[in-house]
Image (cartoon, rainbow, N blue to C red; front, side):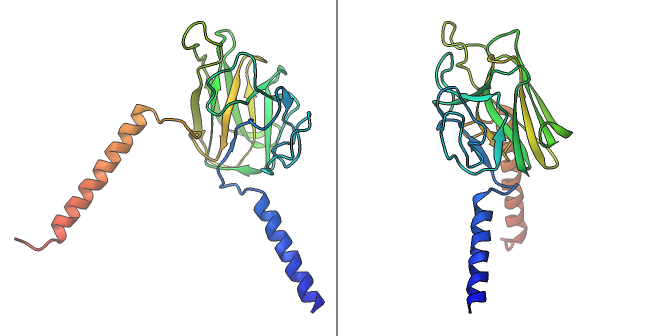
Length: 225
């Protein structure tokens, strides 16, 4: 009897552990809103804490390099999920590691106001920017709207789909000249993003095509008048 109870408890413990870490297919969005201003993110999204003690954060199995910080003040405004955004102070950018990996897509909002300092994002199938490159995005400058506003106030959604299992992402550009928000794993558009008109048009054509097909099918199966 004791052996049976022990087996049940172990099974329940394994189930709880499995439920605490998202699977590769889950969609996860990082908003950086529950960290302190200018706090290094580190293990916060791995069920740990940032360098100023915020945490424990959600256990997504995600860690960030020491250069990655959350910021809630300064020249940032109008970001999609205030107050926090991701930025970095190191010249090599910020690296996000996802030990279990993620699939399908990757997306985020970004703001890059300095014409001399555009950015880029690269997705790898190994941790710490190793292995194969699964996707790469160039990030053009996002002009300040309107002129005279805080320089990082125009946030543009961007994303990419890919094949394979991604395990790390490099956020690059000149240190302190670009910010990121609503970083999303497993989807080609972040929450709050509006698809471009071309995408909406394609979706509309798809709906029309389905409607036409159903109408023709109804006519074909209806009894003759």
